[in-house]
Image (cartoon, rainbow, N blue to C red; front, top):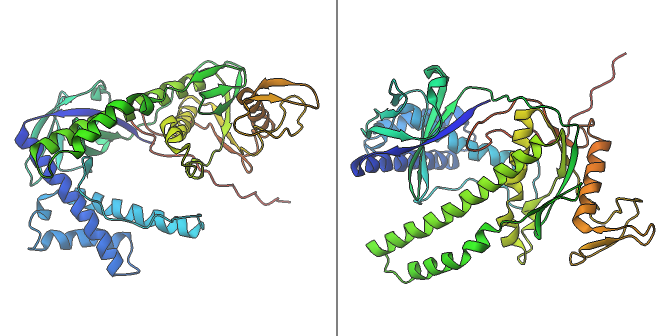
Length: 407
């Protein structure tokens, strides 16, 4: 539905301070809308949009009126998004915490979102000017994406994001991304793990990069230096930024690995089957939680599904029940613990690596029911979404209701 391109903003220190004020104001509007919803039960999305005008007219908060009116509405939409997600989790009886909306606090990362006003692109698409009350001025755009291919009316909204290493501008463009590929007549089943990031049904294995583990030594050193600084000092600010930059680098390494691996898998196969893992439940094991989060299985799955949409490849999420215990040769159940890394079937004498055996089972289940979307999660229609940063939309994971037979 949308392409998201990102470029870094180059400006002066005073301009960055103006962007900071806009980001803080957007956060204030979101928190105020959330408080208004808590104090007045039964209000809806449009009531929050009306409340933005009340905030701007309030003399107690003169800085709110400086923010563009559409940016205020976008902040109210963010508040309503958190509220709607909470209601949806309650309606579905989601186990555990339902995600009650919380107030946003001051942090290194922050953003403000503009719609179709409050900003202007130059004719050569290399500069952007912010024209709201904060008067941030003109910034130079540094990025690899050429914005000349798109008309101005296709730019539906932009988002200014503050990170540890600077300020970035994300452009949301109304353009479908559809790419063609030659059929390979190949199918693959994927089993993700910790010893190896993934093992496919052909026996190929991809090493687990362990980005966080490799950077842990330097992260601990920076954390110790940061904890010894005095609160409110310039030294503390400096080490906080160094620590945030290091974590940002790790997250970028993890994302880059997930994107490249997912694209390679999708481009090489016509059907990709993988486990529908509940990672949120798996990280409750505190002995493995750090390694599971470092592997980023969920991020990898999101990119597999996204590239499946882009390239027209069917991606199938199968139930993970007994995929590691069943024998891929005879189908008998062979119980084994996590420490047992080799599958050895006493019924048919079949011996194989545990992950390879599981990948073969995953592929078999995916091929068996690839057309039955009521029992499995299948995505492959070309109707998604972004081009660069993050998948905006996810395919529906709910079971479809069967159609009534007509006579």
